[in-house]
Length: 357
Image (tube, rainbow, N blue to C red; front, side, top):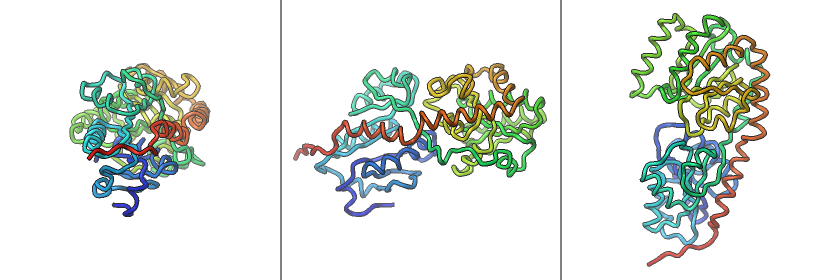
């Protein structure tokens, strides 16, 4: 959908989302961008636009060529950095910002693209350590009104008519990187001991991971737990949010992550948390208080951390309350948006740019 004809002259911020498939990067972008749009005249370019920010199309983008005042192009992927660098070289007056969540050494092309940015944001100190240049660390936030505890968790779970009284969940695409197999193996061991629990994997199964998902289903069938380990497949975001409210315990089992947004979403919803030391878990979780940290890929450690919480749901509820309070204090969406806005303001987008020709 396009925008009003006078919009480009007032525009201060472009939020590109040049990736059709819904992903964690898209999810974080969708949450914070409407908050930024309250502070800057902003437009969303690409798919999966959220409410609260204007959409811009290619026609609108063309109107910005050789505009006098600069504006922010905030990329979160390599292809968005490439587009920003190319547009600027062709006369678009862009200030380029990149948010990096990766916790690994970057390829040469990514390093070069990063060198072309006017400002860099990292989602953790660990991510910042791989950038080889100055970065501002801004951790993700979560909408604690949308991701919030239910009035009655037991009733919220009962509405899905699954066995037992409590739910334990693991969210994200079903694949090895997310540790879906680690979660299933732990559930195959624990659920026979705790008949009041049902486990649920909420997330898409992409075609290239179909074999992996089929193997998980074979393991579940071999354990006779088809009715108590549920793989939902991809759900609408509103249904995912409802699933968070149904959980007593959340298991974050990723082997590697950029940040791991589901951590703070589950905590905000008041679920007890067991998390592998991946992504931002060590920066987000107070081990033993707002969650329990375990080594990635370690089924034995996951079982040992989950079992006390499954044995005593009251202790799970208490941990969930502490987790919720921690997120409200430290990881609000307003705090994230405010810190990003400070980076934008440091680039002085109100100043005219020199246009050659």
